[in-house]
Image (cartoon, rainbow, N blue to C red; front, side, top):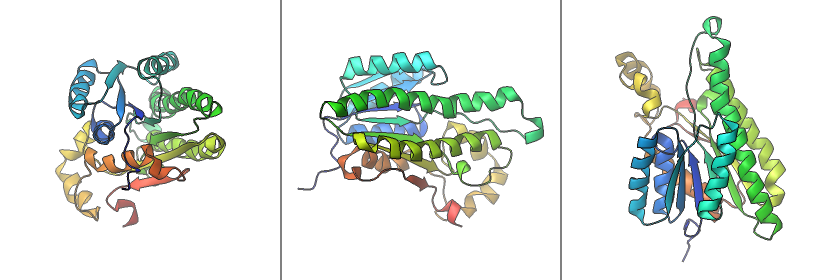
Length: 258
């Protein structure tokens, strides 16, 4: 029987995993058999996510971690390893928006966006890689690092230069790390979502103009949903993707192709 998508015995950590795309991915991986670690800054949402994920019958834990704080990432990774014993897949999903016209964008806003969307991914991947490399040296060479980027990283996102730059940066980071870490059996890939119905896009979802002008341009003719990312999460966490690295998976209902 073909069972490469079975995640039984694997442990996955998802940053920003208490809602939206992150929770959609965590839920699918838990359903496929993985134990889950959630990082998020809202402890109420963390608790709700843990309750939901535990329904699948596997180990789940959550921690309040702001990925823009290096010390919190380092401590959070140590805590996850102490709790779970290992990490097989780490999804750097935590991110924030922050749009403004270039001439009105403050240095503070630009740096805040990059602190979460870029530096947070760097610290998360660095600490996870230390563990995965050590494991590889002891004969267990297998790991998956995934960053949730955005189609804003590959197309022109007006009034979103800081956000687009941060997402383009992590897509490039993933390609570089895919080459660097392959010798340790570590795969590194990025995911570029299009227009997805989450808290981050709440303003656009309630805009009649957006509904009239933008969503009809999506060939799939609908908003993407968090659960649309369950399949790719399970694939990238599983042994089915053991030879798939350095790729940017665009999941946008065809928006960037039209």
